[in-house]
Image 1 (cartoon, protein in one colour):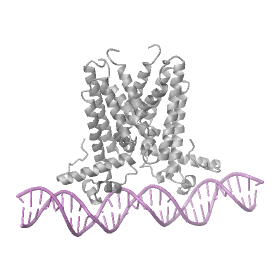
Image 2 (image 1 turned 120 degrees about the horizontal axis):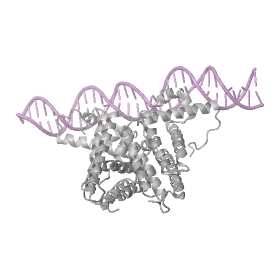
Image 3 (image 1 turned 135 degrees about the vertical axis):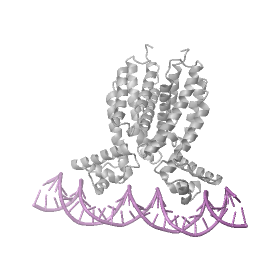
Image 4 (image 1 turned 45 degrees about the vertical axis):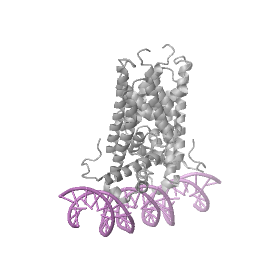
Length: 208
Length: 208
DNA sequence: ATAAAAATGGAGTCGCAACTACAAAACGAC
DNA sequence: GTCGTTTTGTAGTTGCGACTCCATTTTTAT
């Protein structure tokens, strides 16, 4: 999922670094303070760049936001891919759950899910951003489905389960749990919600 | 959960009607177009009121938003209370699930959950709003727990289940499912996600 | 009926955040 | 080196959305 229709002509290493610095700062500020609160000026200070630099790399704010979506998508999917590919046991699923809980705890439950928060803020405001985030969720769902498929192949899960639907349900429990935890500033909601999903998966073991 | 610390002195019936009209218009616009896109001016036109009226009833925008939270909380909890109190069977749970799916379909998946969207938009921007929405979610969770309690009392569910945790998990699947459906503009995600939660509850029947 | 209070109309002001203009500096190719 | 391109600095400008002022009409209380 590339953001730019016409990929940027040429970017020197320095330019690429500056661009990345801007996107990273924007991602952090938007996550921690919300889309509305994160002013372009704050992003400039955080990234140590001037206005002209910002507009040299992005045509306008919505272009920057699309870059933030790509950035956060790569970051989140990267972290989860590590843990979800070659999923081989329920222990691995538990570790994945613990990783999610630890992630939000490390932020003191501020920001919630980077992708979920972006989706909620942008779904009705920017159709292109909405489509991009729908794609991000689809990729995440694929990761989960592939993981469940591999567990099924290994004989950890029954052969007749619908891994695609299960992936939707598990992803929803992650998103909903993170939203509740973010709102409550208490990680127990995600832990419980994802835990329930995993408990359900346990009822689908072959040995059961 | 009352919004105003000092409750408004006196409001004539006409005044109350105008205030309600403003809150209703604000609720609709914020839900359908997002928090950022919904300008005060749009709300004025939609409610057929002038700026002076808006500021006669609300000190500022954030006060209006708190009123919107109260309004949506009452609306959502009202609808769900009808279906969740005296929950007596899995059929009733299915009907509740279908109601959620029908609700978002009637909006063509625009807006998602009124409370979830508000929570995500405001969690990092307005601490008071965040706390109010945490309270709304807590009430919703109580409704679910009470429903599950009554099913347990009737002997539909096992005696040893933790209805509080289950309520968290089910609520998370609703919120996450609605977010995915909103982002995808396709109601199948909520249907699947909540369906999975109910499937899990079925594994907790006494007869199972 | 009349006065006080509440509700409304409409034309403002004002701050500020997004965006721009233009020139200077750094860099890369050769 | 040196010329064209990329990157950056320092100012702006501007549009718009939140909020205000004050006069006027409508309602309520007695």
